[in-house]
Length: 208
Image (cartoon, rainbow, N blue to C red; front, side, top):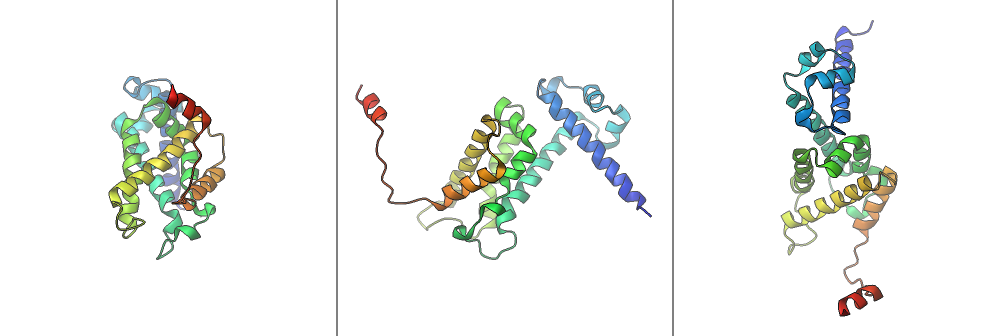
């Protein structure tokens, strides 16, 4: 016999997911301040009573939606080292890098955040989490003692965010697997004695 409470929990999750999907869809074309609870439930094909079973205000729905994204971001970021005592970058494989799978799963929200500035609070939270996680999770997070840990984590956070922004702006042209492979190549191939040839175009522009 099916568990009655399990059935209720499943319906609650389904209703909440439908309301969140409705809100995200509406925010593609309308400012959040202009969206009413009636708009949300009509778009979701639900009644107002269903909304008020779970939320008192539309702001609560938005906040829970953002917390869902942050919670999943944290899980995906920690995936490469959650089962080890020592995290060795040179032993990292692309298959355990899950942050791009997370972005793909929340593609509509990341598009809103990064292309329309519709969710500035969430944008700030994402940045803060990407900076905070290595400092909190990894002991003595820095390549050497001369490097400031906070600056190192900030550098990495914005590097990852930069890749995500580029991915979003190109309409998710690449697969999540490809993005993970590229991140791995970038972080494991940092020659300190690299020599770069200056482009002819730059030289010409600099002399004008």
